[in-house]
Image 1 (cartoon, rainbow, N blue to C red):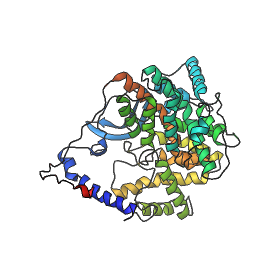
Image 2: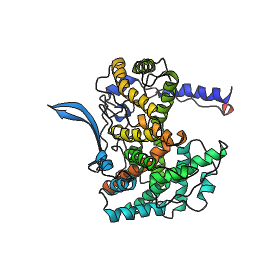
Image 3: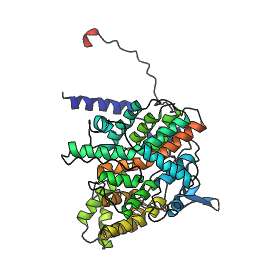
Image 4: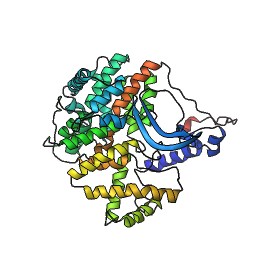
Length: 451
């Protein structure tokens, strides 16, 4: 028997003994995925950090509405629109989420200077940690680096609010370096390409530093920096009920340190059901390009999308990736806001024809899904529909797509960690209903010869 056969045999035993009858979930009122039959999340806590609105009450009935995303009492589109055309707002919005208020010029300058000061790694860290074990899985590389950074912190286990704030702000500053350097190490050792290690510029924004460190010539346009900055702001936080943010809350509640908490959140985000959705969109779009000859021909596009929904094309799972969301029905506000920036970047990159394909899919896919799946509450594109296209136009490799999500979401995780530390000292300990059957048979003794 081979090792693989042995473990497959163990799997069959697990499947037999771990199987729980689906009817029991209904019988005990258990919501799979902590969501009820209408898709609403089970209430697990309170937050003052962000809010999602996807429905409203009209005449006593719940009706879907255009999605809204609020950060600390401000609609996210208003925050983005308040910025000048060439102004990056990542640091400003990060301050808002962390502190609960918008900074004035003096506070913002001080915060940016602090981010710049912390935007460096310990001596020899790049060589001894990042370059020592390169991997195509950048999220794993980053998580290892996060845990190792604790070894360089004399107050790693101090969970006071002030110290946790210091650690969170340091990690927000370091995340772009951890991501880009991890990719360059992989690119050099595993892909046999050139080694590029540019030091970040403490005077530049987060978006500018990502592009500077990633590119051999360090060059980027104002449009590129602005679009990437907008993407980071839109991915920074999302209501508190998402998987990785809940993980942050759970681990924080146990009394664990900041590094372990953020590493746990990273492990959650890297799951393809959470942070890797835009990669599936890009794979699907590549397949569509190979089977659609005219991006302006809506009939041809609709015919192929129908094949995808009918499980006759692409990955045969019947899904049009980038369409639909667990919370939003009529529209995802992040996609709605992001689209105009995507269009601007597509024009600069001479990718208008590709953008036309995206627009036509955005129009046709909801109609086809509604017809084929009988979904009448509404299906709309989510932010992942365009984010991969943007990263591709910016020259960001797919290995970094989920890492870019993490570079943004570390802000939201940090805000929720601080809120959890301040608001409650209770450990999060949900209940599971045991449906185990007692075994009344005697336990056989094993002979020493069989050991």
